[in-house]
Image 1 (spheres, rainbow, N blue to C red):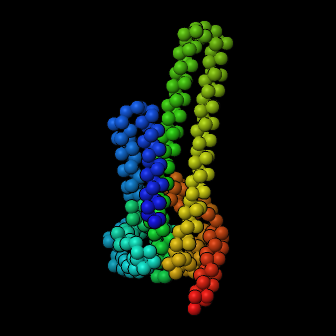
Image 2 (cartoon, rainbow, N blue to C red):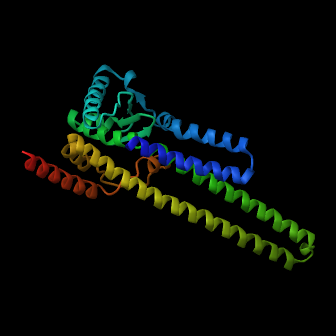
Image 3 (cartoon, rainbow, N blue to C red):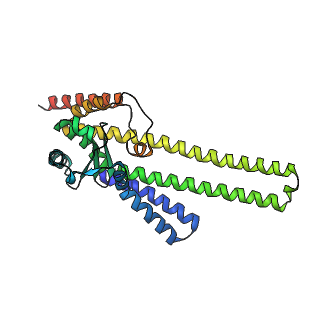
Length: 290
């Protein structure tokens, strides 16, 4: 069910992009090609992020690191199969060797990376807990959805930029035709008009970006809580809670665009509190069923 819902939400965004591009150009071929290119990025864009971060496939890692990841994968394949009947054997694991932070990332298209800091500091069960969390993102197509929305916002901002440029050209031609440039008053009026129009388009762009970031934050928070719950349901809630507490950085820094797209997390203390409630609920249910 989670995979179906994930596919539907990505397809909905791409369908809206198609309608927007088609209504703009009124050409089926242009709309199809544009959406086709966007679809390729949505599906495979995670590989560019992996390449940028210098991630190494588990198959190319030294024996000890490869065995740890493959053992974790084998256990999770069995866990997920038992819990929901879903086959995740196609999951591809990567290591980011140059990153000492304790983190993991789902890039979509069955690709998950963990940092060297996670691999060095997590015991086998905790590693399973972290990967189980990322599996939920993979099954729900969260990374693909984030890229699809990012593409939509980028197209919208580009369209507004084109409209702003066209408006400036139109204003220039109007002032030129009316011969308003013969006096300083006309030049000042032209500059004031273009500045006002440019300011309106700039405010519109900033407003769209602000709304996008707010909605992305809400969607990411929901996805993180859902993925935490999924890891807990697989039996790794306690280990994930411990990992979150251990991985919390002492000094928060400004996230990069890649981190904002793939790792926008709610506050750690709230995640841990929710996990503790879920663990208590599970314990109560298990006690009642005995």
